[in-house]
Image (cartoon, rainbow, N blue to C red):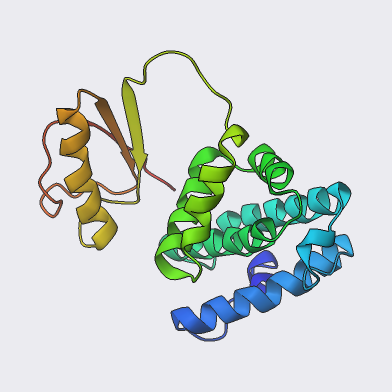
Amino acid sequence: MLKEIMANIPIAKPFTIQELQQNLTRDFVVIVNEMTGVDVTKNSSTFTSFDMEKIISAVRQVYGKIFESAIVASELKIFIANSLLCRLFELWKNSATPELFFIKIRQNFTPAQIVAALELYNSILENQNWVLKFFYEHKNIFPRKSGKIRTIALYYTRIYSGGIERFLSTIIPIYIQMGYRVVLFTDEYRPELEYPTPPFQFVHSRRA
């Protein structure tokens, strides 16, 4: 599937979520091996720093190709791209140097991309608890900043018709009550369908 997307070749048939995940896992192994010469089926605790850099760089290239594709619907692009990052997270989880691995991931992906993929990882894939445990044990992977946080920015494709969307409509009032300024970035704007929320800053990004 990833090869078809990278070559802009139409995908032959629709897939269930389970089939999609299986195909992504298989293609991830093949494509990374072809692009880097690294066998990602091996225990990632044996990867060198150079191996990590090559793997993450390859995933970054494929990630970009997914969003350039003219044959995949926008919402499916997001799901496939986040699922691809989840494959990378599996290697990160089992790495002998997880902090170094994550630093290299941060150098190639934005915080929003990482958080979106982690949310998918926690909501769909197995072994959900390791993410929270990892960030608790490795607090120093994020640089500390002085000063009080006053603004919280959130992103999702829309704010209607779904569990994440309903969760956002619930959490935004809590943030506002706590005294934060909230900014929501979305790709869709359908006020007649959206879950009710208190006034907050809304930024709609129209994509071609």
